[in-house]
Image 1 (cartoon, one colour):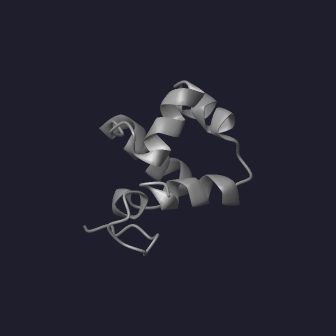
Image 2 (cartoon, rainbow, N blue to C red):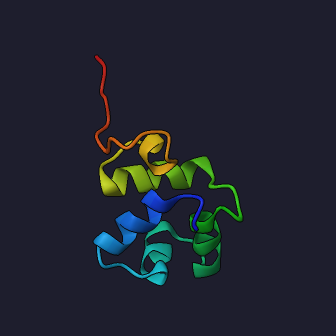
Image 3 (cartoon, rainbow, N blue to C red):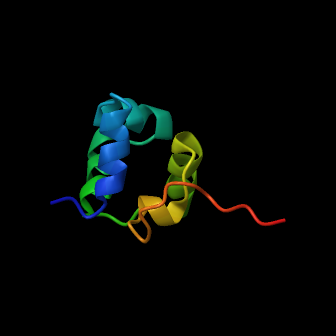
Length: 74
């Protein structure tokens, strides 16, 4: 079971392969797959890029919440 299932589910829902997303994130497919399964820590800049790409919170990506929406405070 992947350590970060939300990341995998978002990718699959967008009909993207790991290679597709790796190109978007400017990393290798192997590196991306390691992020997805939790074999390698996800760098902050990759987390931010994923949150921006999917329009969700970093907490959602990391499985800390099941709410996709970001909370913006003024």
